[in-house]
Amino acid sequence: MTPHLVVATPVRAAEMHAASVSLGYAEMLLRLARRLPVEVLSGSLTFAADIVRGRNRIAAKVLREYSDVTHVLWLDDDQWVDDVSVVAEMVALDVDVVGAPYTNKRQPLRWVHQHLHPPAPPVGELLEVAGLGFGFTLTSTRALRELAAAERVYTDHPNLHRVANIFGQLFHHPALEQGVEVAEADQALLSEDYSFCLRWRRLGGRIYLYTKAGLVQHAGAHAWDARQMPGGVIG
Image (cartoon, rainbow, N blue to C red; front, side):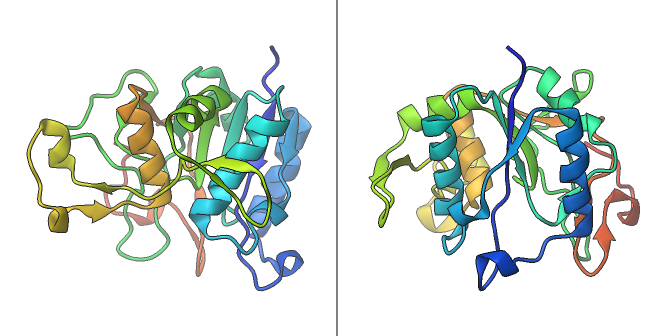
C-alpha cells in the first residue's frame, strides 16, 4: 500500500480563520504536498477545544473516515523543516510512533523528548525514548486503532461522535516503571502528548526519536533550534 498521510495541526485563535501560523510551517506544507499524497485536516476539528479533546477528535476522525490513511503527522503551526524528505524517511522507518527532535522555544533551551531510565543506546538512526512532544511526530493509524480499542470512549458533545480518550492526561513518575511505589502527590500530571506515549508503551509499544531528521525550526520570538543550545547533540 502506498503510504497516505494526514497532517494534523491544532488551531489556536479567537476565531478559527484568524489563526496565525508561521510562514515556515505554511511553506513546508506546500513542499510536502508536492512530494507525498497528503491531506491536511481542517482546523475546525480542534478550534474551541482544549488540546486533549482536539487531538482525540483528530484521531477519531481519521479512524472513522480515512480508511486508506496509513499515518498521521502531528505538526504544530510553529514548526517546520527545510527538507521535507524527512517525512517520507520517517514513514519508511516502519515504526508506529517516531518523532523528529526539536527544542522548546525559550531560554534555557532543552530537548522536548524524554529519555528512558536508564537511557537507551541508539540503534542506527533510531533512539528509543520514553516520550515525545507532538509538535513534529508521526504515528501509524495502526497505533491509533490499538490505543482507541484500549481506552475509554466518550461522546464528543455537541457532536454525537464516539471518541477514545487516547490523549487524556495521566499521572506518572518514572520510578513507577521500576516497580517503586510513589506517593500520588509526588507524581506529575503529564501533558497530552507524553500521556499518549505512556499509554502506547503500556500496551507494549515503543517510542522512537529519528536522530537524522536534521534541524526542526520552532518559531517563538525567532526560530529556535539546537544550534542555540550549548552542547546541543541529539541524544
